[in-house]
Length: 331
Image 1 (tube, one colour):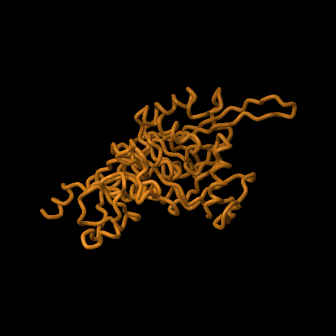
Image 2 (cartoon, rainbow, N blue to C red):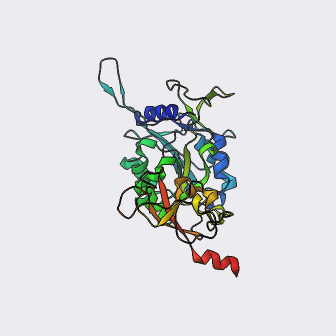
Image 3 (cartoon, helix red, strand yellow):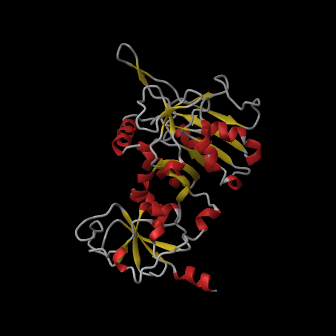
């Protein structure tokens, strides 16, 4: 998708409190297959998901026994709407608790759901009470409220697996969690999240927009990630470094305002350089906390953006190799 089309799409989403981007089942299945060991005897809460239509609910209900879940809860927000005489009609949000006893289609009906007194916003007391009962939160939260949503999960010390925009890495609140090894990127990133289902009133922007075989309207921003604190073996694999710094110094310019070198692609990190290195934010998708330290985000010693010959490259993360990783290789 072209950058201007992507920006239009995201700006449209920001105007809607509910950010009506619905995750495809194929993307949920592709990511969740890597975390199955975490769910046995756990209560899963999908707190931004209509249990009547959510693919997150569909996934967990269909795999309830295989995952060994204790309970599944899905809850959704319902926005107050204006009626014809300019007053506000209050529409309650609702939730459903699943214990593995639905029919083979694993689908609740209107008679199964429980209505909140309020609108079902994840910040409301009723939703928070369900959050407190839960072990793992899995959902696609409103992108426009991502900081606030994540802060709530951290405050209540919850395990989570959520979708966000790649630029969420640049939020200081998110980077601090990643730097402290309290959160990390999931398995799929960018085109690894193949697209979102949007309602009829969304324009289908971009060359990859489509209508699928079921009539769903799909847009593909290609700039999303999964953020989690559920561990996988994948994030403990070393990046295979092949390039060399010494003899190729001209390929690795020094920063004006920091004692480090710039690298434009993760695959170009030199294997023989033990100083400070600035890498693109997508490095975090390959980051192994046992191989590298995360030093700093974006700023140089003068607290200004990292620059090379007076020009600033796109956001960089400063990293440094761990000697421990080297000792393991030579042992």
